[in-house]
Image (cartoon, rainbow, N blue to C red; front, side):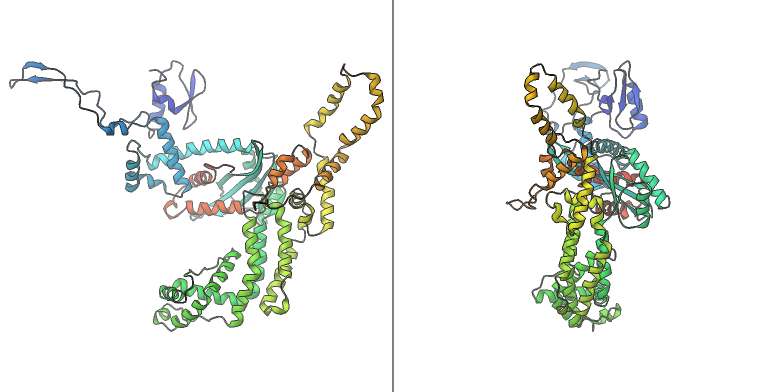
Length: 633
């Protein structure tokens, strides 16, 4: 059988004339005599669920059909022969329901896998009756894979392909920033997740790119040493050991110890630290918060109270809104809870007064609800105004597609300015305590911020900020001095070629030696400026030239945000040494939120319908959920 005619070859990639490689398990098979027997036997033994040959179109005649018929008499002897009957006219369906090629079948299979892993469907969806009906309506020729095929064949194959694509993407990275976090599933299995963030140079543009390296099952104790060893394994697997510029984690002691133990530079998640500041401040208004939480509990637990609230808000022409309960680990949820209850305050007060006397509420044990006093409602209103900027900054700092690390000092500066803008004599006593506590916590937790080399250099190298991104000019000048030394240690490939180029110019036969004597002093002076005598002088000139450029406006005239990476892409040849540092600083993520988002998705993946997924399959599905179809746009 010829290779061109047999569809078995589509399941194998050709390595050499005498061997091929299976696309599913990567096993190499010999085909020296061009026989397909070895390949068919391998598919039947190792991948029995894969369809080797195209499916027959509905209504297609079978090979055993005869072209004519013979008429026999009653005694069973042949009496005459009848000529072949003309075949019936083909139905339109025979042309519409064409059999799928192996390539088309594989494309649809891959899309089914993408639907499952990215939209959090269980594997068994392919066996649901309604799903099969839908597929049959869309394309009767396509036969969905079974649940077993999805799990044991398609997902592992697509996972291997995606790993290779991610490795190829990571070759673009000059330096990477990692975010790392731990998570426990519904089945009490422990996982460690690591994401990589870097500046990608492609098609004359720069962009921030990110990839999930792993979300791997980890059964060892989560000590600093154990996590360090695991992280080293991950970096070696992805060939990133010498590219790590910083690792961002939360403020857990074991995570910080793990980063220090590996000799990497650590940055504590800015959003996590901001959360600690906010939580600490909100304790100053705990009495008012407890009363609000009790009211929210009433309307969330009692269907009667909830329905009465909807009636009251409708009668008062207020927006019908569901009250929000707070989550202890997220201060933003407390802010949203206060904001929502203030939106329908009048309706809440009226409804609580009515439902407290209801027998239904008494039976549910929810009648002991204390309404807030006028002063406590005023405290809630003040808290919303005070905490609003914390909410805005938390959301702004948590993105992955734009530079965030250079904004940290500026955000802390804005927080202090906002808190100091309140006039204490116009605040309630709890409001005054809240502001004082927040200011104290900010100063305590961020007092060393401008001394941090990573953050300070990232701020200077963002053309939108430079020295205006600092709180103190003293720390700015100290950071510039450190940047001089950092730049002086950058050696460009062109530096080693300078002398060779000069020799070639001097030895050119077109030059007249006697004329050169006239220009000797001039050439020496030019070289002093274009090729300084040492690296440090060159570094100072390059940094000072950059700092002397006008500040990049934060927004364009059309109101769009200016991208600092686009600015650097246009000037990377003007500041070649600085550009090398830019790639190690502006790629740093200000928060570990990217890793936390991984586990938010993982929580949906390991849902009640998927609780029995084994840990290796969970890792593959989470990896595909993040990386499948991922691009830099």
